[in-house]
Image (cartoon, rainbow, N blue to C red; front, side):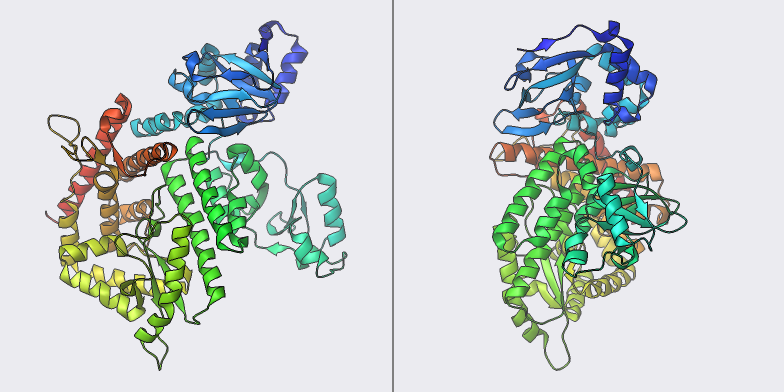
Length: 633
């Protein structure tokens, strides 16, 4: 059983200061004012739990204290899903329950002998008021109703006190960067790396502007195997022009950059000067997920089995990020980015087996094209290819279709179901030359019938994923020119979009299905997210915006259409709230072993969630009203 010391208010000053110094090593305490840290330390009690002992569980009712791990490892377990979380020194729990004044969702058990600092719930709430930094850490500055709703959703999962992915990089940097000059001998740089126990050194010029980076991982490929002379200057072995972000960027941007490039280090640069180096390990301290590790494993995957394992890692990562407070915008973008990497590796493996020796581009369509994939997603893809002089589109297609079929099947084997509507590259209808794609889009634009408008809602969101991206860019430029000069088609798109009205009721809050297998439910994708997606696509086509993501489109068209920034952000906040509901619902269905879908019973929502969903649907009606006004419908 636990042993808790008496209140440390009367503890010696030396003990208080030692506690302060210990806490200051970890976020968010490292960003708090010293007076607030001393106030906190004076009110902490020290507790001990033996290995296997329970620290906290749902049956204990409303949480009475905050736990901060001083030493040892605590494991979070959720009924029905077993262990799902591991907490280490400096981490806190359960923030979500304390913020919501409720019981914990998970059981927290000592995985080893554990010492914890304990803070009474009343003092926790006082600390929130005393320290803006701590309040920001716990609440992410919930200033508006929609932001508050997202926090409420995240609090249901975020029982662990991880720093969230919205943390500015300036608050993550924990040490001054170690640097050298381009003419520094490799031998000296390696000695510096060893002496400082670091994994990378940054090469800077006389003005402290980063010009390159060299990591321990580069030793084998650039030094040992080539047999490089250790007196060679760093400029000859460094990676030039390393990726960099600003101190104002957030942890999510760093995680995404690491995933996209397979990097383990990202520089933090301000006004061209080096401020710090962020390693993958620094992000692990925030999120306990290996974003770049997964990306690296995907790139190195030698067979389909390795990619299937990586697909499972992506799935686990996405669920962990949901629990750690990632926003729906961040989460869907990261899911899509990692899925892009996996798809790319599938294509590379199949090309290595039997290359068709044809210039082509693999296109992502639908939600993948918009970088908005959720936990439940099937395949929507196509191919655009070159027809060399002296051959025909049919001949090229015949050589590409076997490759496309293998790729589509491999993706299905990795957990991305084949599209029920057959919108896949292995379908000859969607394996087309550039001229054939132009002809197809022209038919849809000129016809404007319901089937053509349905195609537009899927294919107009295409994005190049692999291969000759110039083909897709050429098609996009042609398409924007075509739609800009076909106002009748845009008018028809608006009329079609307005047929899908948000399900707000006059008597009840929501209009739900009246019977059948979906009785009393709403379709959050069709009736919730789609109105925003349709509006963003329409505005982008009308104004020549090449972006495909809903948020990127909305933010790009706002200025062009004289939309107030606050209005655009209200629409996007509503869209992302609905996306978060979709993700949470799919997460819960997955945990229960059920098929994932986009339907939800509004009666299962709490009062705040119902209120916000109602407001989100109102915002969907507002964006539809804007379309109707612009096109006089």
